[in-house]
Length: 168
Length: 436
Image (cartoon, rainbow over all chains, first blue to last red; front, side, top):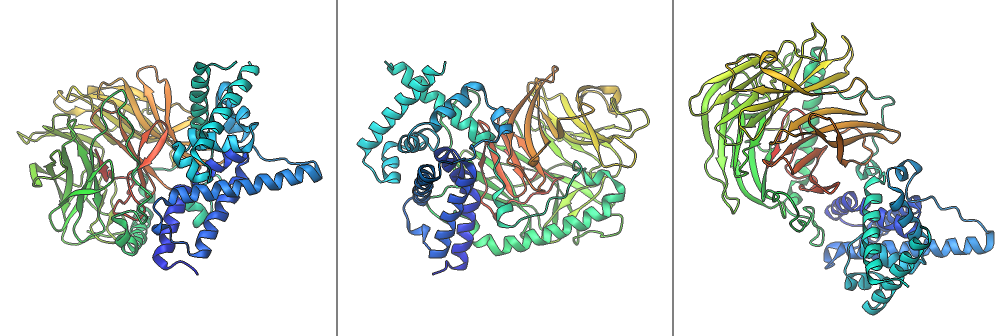
């Protein structure tokens, strides 16, 4: 079912105003901006093709965030397979060299350490500290318990702190 | 062993790094993804069309055509513009917790020129909701835009009456000589309700340009020879410069003082300059005047400077009663288009174009005076071909940036939208259609 004219216009409005935010979320999780753009594009395409009624949802942005995170997981799984069988995986970094130069060395170190964390920890930390979600919202987005969110966030943060300490 | 302090610091570093990375991450404009717009290679820096007589006719046609398209789009989307399409999406972003500095203005005023009668709309900053509508008199066209006093509860607008619109669509544009501009004032209360729109001061001859209400609202400074105007309706915009002067009207006495600007340093001798924006310092006496001049006789490239005018002088020559505060370097990294002074006179806020490998970007800057030390307040994603303008509140701390059909205020390097797409806000490069 295709969305009606007004629903399509509204979806275009959401796309226009939330696409950047969702691409950045995906880029931080994947460490790869072009792949994140593809994921977000796919999410909106699916919503459009299925005629999903975002207006019926209590929190459509949360729904889209969850869809993007799931899409990122699929990309990560595919990467794992490629790495295992072909031994190569060259994701593009989320920032171009020119953009990275605009960041301080300290910030680049933090982002590099974040990129080396396991995917689940990275997802939780990005949702917490970039998207600004509460533990309950992260739990709803990822489909896990708030307890798991707490423990994953704590372990992720500790791992990040250790990595940054070692890199000094 | 990782201590709690270290965890806390790591969390802060992570938040800071992600925010900074998101800010510098180039992201193609979503509008361009939806409807690709071919980029012209080697596009020259945008020129102010009303400054180039040879381009005036083409400019009028282009502006009218754009207005028709915009109005058509507005008519199509206006039914959904009054509220976000989805309850979970907020176009007006949640206000941040109170930080240092002055409070964010609670209301702002936008302009709806699509209707048969121009409307000034008071909107609440927190949710974009319209709290009051103030129509201009029927048949009046907005010129010089709108301006707020330091106390952000009083607003002024400049307008002129015309029997039909376009007033006079000739090859040379629209003459302002046969028209008179009136100034209008209205106030809003703490709930955003508006009082009556009242004509203040005497009429002034011509179609005036950008206006700036003095901090106490007793005087209005205006570009006396800009000549741009807009609406109401679907094909009513244009104008061209006629002369070059800055005026200040005392609303109580009706007295008008005018300073003419044939030449101004650092423009080369013999080069005519054209004034544009005006902005007041908090002393209510010093007026910052920005002006531009062509860097070559035939090219559209412009240079720019800002001078401080002592408005207690009796009028006459701008050069004799002002001094230059800032001027554009010969080779600009950030090519400034508009500049307004802070109330304390210690800085200029400016919009500029930054040419990058990803295309031109809008940049909002703050220049410390007199050092010229530059701080980037906001950098847009790579852009296509939209113009931008900005306005600031009475404190000078809070800035609304309008870029294309988007308007938002700048907070911590981000543009927080104040306007739903397709809603009443329309953008006209020469006229300020939003204020707070």
